[in-house]
Image (cartoon, rainbow, N blue to C red; front, side, top):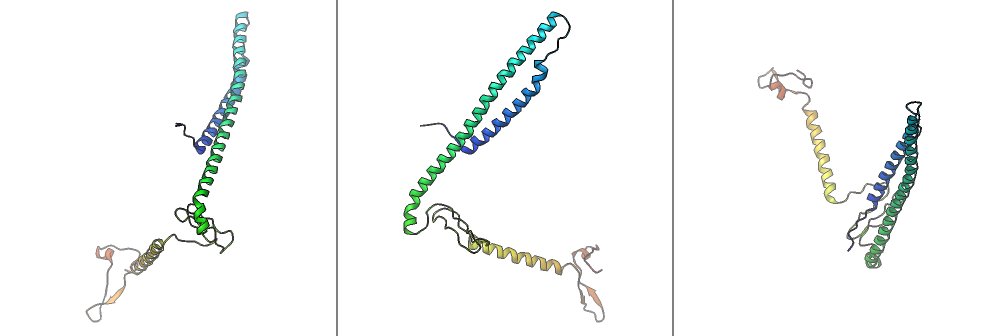
Amino acid sequence: MSLVIATPQLLATAALDLASIGSQVSAANAAAAMPTTEVVAAAADEVSAAIAGLFGAHARQYQALSVQVAAFHEQFVQALTAAAGRYASTEAAVERSLLGAVNAPTEALLGRPLIGNGADGTAPGQPGAAGGLLFGQRWQRRGWRVRSNRRQRRRGRVDRQRRQRRGRWYRRGRRCRWERGVVVGQRRQRRCRRHQRGRRHRGCGR
C-alpha cells in the first residue's frame, strides 16, 4: 500500500512557490556579486592585497556554485510542474473511464447519465444537456433563470409579500393623520408613538 498522496493543485501551487523563491535568490546573488567579487584592499601592502584577493576568489566560487544551483532549481520546478500535469491528466482519464462504465446502462435505457452535471444551452431558449439522474446539476435554458425546487419559489413569494407589506405600513405611519374627535366642532390628532412621548419628529405634521 502506497502512503504517498499527490494532489495536482497542491503540486502546482508548490511549483509556483519554488519558482518565486528561486527568482528571489537569483536576484540577491546578482546584487551581491559586484561588492563581493571586487574587494578593494584595505591598504597598499602585500598582506591587504592578498586578503582582498582571497575574499574575491571565494566570492567568484560562490557565484559559480549559485549558477549551478539555480539551474538545478529550475529543472526541479519544471519536473514538479510536469508531474502535476501528469497527475491531473491521469485522474481525468480514470474519472472518464469510471463514469463511462457507470453511466452506460442508464444512457442506453433512458438516454440520461446516472452521475454527471448537465450543460447549459448554447442559444437563447435552447435546452441543454440533461444532468445525472442520481447526482449532478441540472441544465438551464440560456437567458432564463431556473429555480431548483418549489420551496425556493414559495420562499421568494413570501419574502416579496413581506417586503411589500412592510413598505405599505411604513408609508402609512410616516405622517400622523387627523380624525374628528368625539366633541362636536373639535378635531384631535391621533398621535404616533413619538408624539405620545412628547417628542417632535420630521415625519409628523405637528
